[in-house]
Length: 623
Image (cartoon, rainbow, N blue to C red; front, side, top):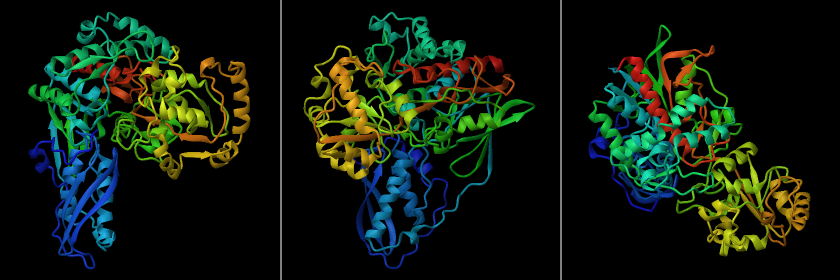
């Protein structure tokens, strides 16, 4: 994610057609007391600092330009194009955020507010309500309506349109590039063109048996099989559309190679799929989130939503599918279903549980499995702006959660075999920190210095029993020392000459006793509490000591509505709701807790579920 000036990846027609964000421009009126000039403000985006230049002339804002940013291509463009224009047109900072680019939108607005203050103005003078332009009702009729243009939705739309159905996709974002699917690493799948070219012969059945054993009967076996076995089909379909893949190695030692990495991102990844759907007569309604499923005589017959202009949109259909991507952008649902709301979002904040709530409103029920697709690259903390290791402003001191040292809970007690986190950071590490809500890595001077110079894997002698140690996202904490003060200032790191001082800062009452007990076990070479491998039992030696606080992080949540084996939502009696299908991360019936140990499983099952749902909808409508 390189620093760059304004990116113009979206078509000019789309930008101009939606430039007003559904809001009526107002005539600018001069504001007293504000000084003319050009000012530069800074906001904090998803990828770090954003610089915005604001020109004030005659007491009015005449130009707003984003001059530098580190945001994700394919996601940031609508906000960067349209938020500034709406500010100038309306002389107001009360601008609705662009769905899918909320953090980018807010960063621009914060920077503009800073410029107003620099000019001697009062931000309150630019907080004018903007009148919405819409209000009419727009109706469509189709065979299948799909809510959500992510992994499941796009594969469902492609499969259904290839099967001869007329398809409409309602998407909350300004394009299909706003979903996690547009930026994720890639899906797991078997028996693919790419796997065969690599000489890999692992079958769908072999991997299914591994997944189902991992789930320990807590998922619907038939549903898992039907969705998983179509993951490879989805990958081959995308290859057929010109989307390239490579096959990853077995990073975590699960016994097979299944993760397919996308070799294209953004428009190059999503464009071929949406173009194929449109070529088959399909239609995408962007910035049109679904809000209610239309039910008649106990059947799902359409979806009602609202578009960017404020118009009510009604899509009548023979079958309905929801696949809106989970709920990581909804603090209330995070608290309710995961136990904590301080889950740091690593991907899109656009998923806010819309599909889940629509299905519940229509008479559906929840399944029991809820979890997170955790961060395999580092720990996380909501007090720091950048939590993803490949962004430039990432603080490398977040990495100690990956290394398998000494971890304690809020009481200062050990709570886990730390090597399990180091071995499986994506699956077990995500669940471990989520269960605690907050965890702490405790580091002594020698360990910290070694991690900052040679790296933990080399410091430990390149242990053969740590396969994922060769794939660390932050192999050397090379910027750790220069970034340490920033972490301390933000409140998630602390260093002191004594453990007592560190314990007092974070309230870790039992820390000193825990370290003493841990060091005794290290001296004996045996973890009598949790069975951590002896070569990972490195004692806490001389200070200064470093303690880092980490919180849960999620590329995506998973879990939600209960479906039958055909992805039909079920009601309180367990009966399928006619015409109502679900897919992707918001289905609770095929994802295990913790997350499957094979990387790419979440998106692999999602794309497979899109195909499986489409096949069933085609049969339901008689295609």
